[in-house]
Amino acid sequence: MRKMINYQPVPMARFMMGFLPLLALLLVYLMASDARLSLNAADKLLPGFNAMGEAVYRMAFEASPRTGEYLLWADTLASLLRLAMGVAIGAMLALVFGLFCGALPVFRAFLSPLITLFALVPPLAVLPILFICFGLGEVSKVVLIVIGTTPMITRDLMLQVQTIPREQLVKAQTLGGHSAQILWRVILPQLMPRLFDAVRLSLSSAWLFLIAAEAIAATEGLGYRIFLMRRYLAMDVILPYVAWITLLAFALDLLLRLISRHCWPWYYAK
Image: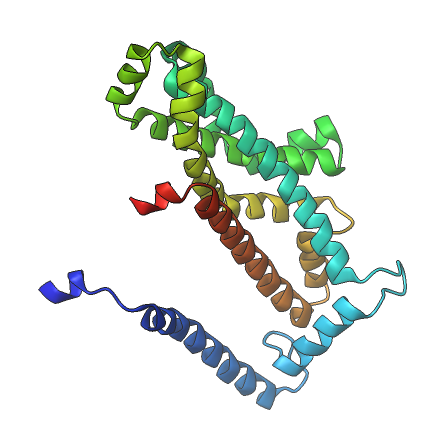
């Protein structure tokens, strides 16, 4: 047992170990799908891969007779634009609040209770309020993502600022640095890679808020399409859409990680 805690698998072994649970899950689905379809060929709960492939081809490569759009790509673009706007605005606000509240006790005393209050409010509970205030358009969906992600990222950055060794700040002041210089040249560079990590951790919540908002009030988007297809029990469309959202979330997480590693390699060398 002592050796287990010190064992570090090689990259290929790590890849295979991560792939095996996914393979097992896929095999379980295939067996369950075959069992249900053998009893009822028209079963919609667990469609076969052929049915899902045909549905994906229809959604992605055949224009909609009603709108003339390729629905999968139109839905993806609409959802990604909403997600990107909400996460970007939330990250910028969180960076400002986290930097000032973490580094300046006056700002922390003034704004920290308000940030904590917003962090404790369930974002989905204010969704009807957002629809009333901003309407059913894009603004309410983006604002929901901002409200849901900003407090979480802000609190993370505030804690990160407070873990910076006090000696660095003292040395900067000894060398004649004033508050603005210390914020800009000492604290902010150490905060940026943590911002990307916090955004990566908040992506799952951002997707949740996006799908919920699209399910209630939207005319396009991945969440809208999933809940629309639910009415027809079209699992051959719903399951590929869920898998597509998962793939998009993984790609965004990987992109943020690569950008962070490229811009701040020293942070990952610790």
